[in-house]
Amino acid sequence: MKILLINGANLNMLGTREPEKYGNKTLKDIESEVIEYGKTLGAEVDVWQSNHEGEIVEKIQSAKGIYNGILINAGGYTHTSVVIRDAVAAVNIPTVEIHMTNIHSREEFRHTSLLTGVCIGIVAGFGEKSYSLALEGLVSYLN
Image 1 (tube, rainbow, N blue to C red):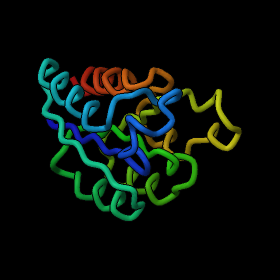
Image 2 (image 1 turned 135 degrees about the vertical axis):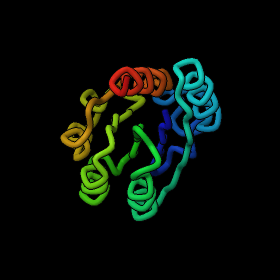
Image 3 (image 1 turned 120 degrees about the vertical axis):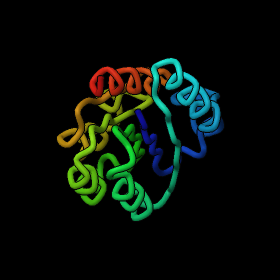
C-alpha cells in the first residue's frame, strides 16, 4: 500500500513557527515518524512539501495510478484553494485532511475548509499526533 503525504505552505517552518501552537518538532521529524509508523501498518509513505499552490495541484494529479491514498495538510490553502480541492476530487484517491491545531477554535476564517467535502475524513487538533492518527485512519479505510 502506497500513501502520499503532502504538506503545504509554511509547514517547512515547523519547529520554529509559533511553537506554542505547532510544537517544537520540525517537518522532517514529523515526516520521519509518519514513514516509520507507516511501516508498522504495512504502508509505504512518501513525503512531499511545497509552498506553491500550483505545485501542490501537480503533485496531487501525478498521484493517480501510483498511490492508494493521500494525506494532506494544505496549511492556509485549506481555506482558500478551490484548485487544490478540485485536484483532490479529480484524482479520486481516498484522501484525509490533516490539521495540527483545531481549526474550529481559531480565527473565523479558518473554520471553513474547502477540502473537507472531497476527503474521506479530517483529523485536527492533536498537534503532530494528527499525522499518525490520519495515517492510521486512512490505512484502516483502505484495508
